Length: 183
Image 1: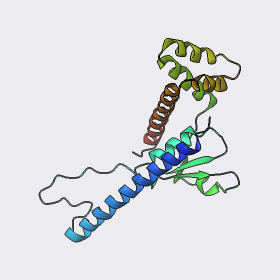
Image 2: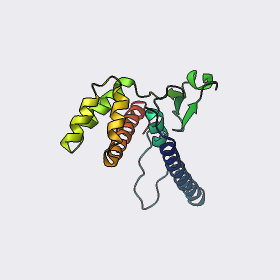
Image 3: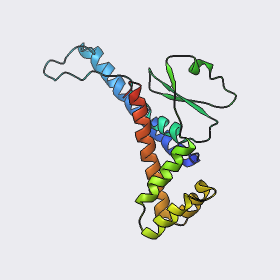
Image 4: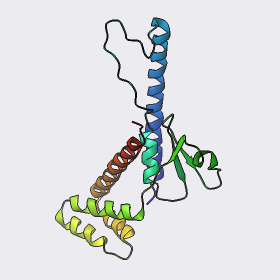
């Protein structure tokens, strides 16, 4: 199931805002290094030592979008040096990303993982009547559509499903990126 337009907009704005804050902090740090002579390896006179970085910070919002996009049409790549996520649409040349050790293809969800998410979520739903109806959709001929139709009857359940999926996508993307040595 592909993520909605407004969800992409919200996640994109959050990523833009985070990158803007990080850029401002980087500019302030660089100014202090130039003004005081404290370099990355230097210690401030009366301060503690700063922790060493283990790699670039990754774009969690971009990874979350990539992870949740089940369309199969867009390929997403993580830049292992900067932590940015780029999308390669049909017709775009993916060769610079696919043939480089700098980029890692972001794995997407599979139909099996989506079915597992529906099953796990259905177990957590209250009230019991809705939980039983959601569990019954898992055995339907078209389980994804039946599941969505059942959720459509409860705005609260729709919100809970969205939060559940976002949280799982964030954890999966963070675990995957950590396995590559980013943080």
